[in-house]
Image 1 (tube, helix red, strand yellow):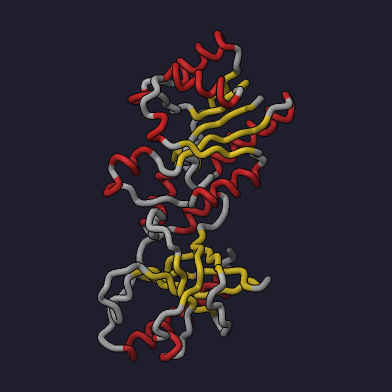
Image 2 (cartoon, rainbow, N blue to C red; image 1 turned 90 degrees about the vertical axis):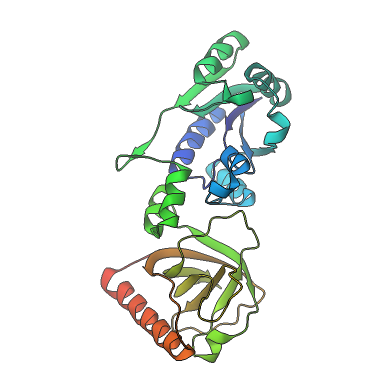
Length: 298
């Protein structure tokens, strides 16, 4: 028997975590399996992909984060496979396939074909079918409703510290360090070039960030450029390049998690590599000053 919550849960932010912790507590009390049913993408990303900013987390990251909270089973449903079900059919599926005894959802939860089902209907059916329904009210921080959309906006606006506040942790860029042309090394600032290998993920505002990363057990600060390298490239591909402060380390082929701490400046196009080198040196100096004077910690 299961206690279930349903949603995309992109980012697994503090609002999601609050609901899931309630679900886990309830599950322990009544000997149920705390279960999350989730989807690869939100509905708006499927019907209007051109207007969707991207996912905060991959499905794998979401599963890991939910299990850290205490969710024991995570089920990924295909929206296309359930889109034909009306609201009653969807509830019947939850009861039959997952042996649902309790369900926890947000106040604005909608379900069934054309999203006709709402929390009021869920409560009514729960009463007749014998499962409990817990509706979690909107969670407000700083006068704003916490949502994945709010976090995406913060990242697109170059405010990683705001995103971190609502996520409950730093936003991270994760990927494999790959070989590039070595321009950074040639001008004295070697970089680890990260391939995220997932075009569905959100791309934060282009520019230079103060970042931190745990490398071989050591927490290192660095400066990361996110953008299209207008000085040296013309292909327009987004790149993620991090230069660690006062540390040279070969990370080629390894996987790296880089936390965005602070947006420093926008991406610029320089007329030559000499100007680029001077700009990076200034970024490094500014980063060190920020760490020292503002006592910034990831």
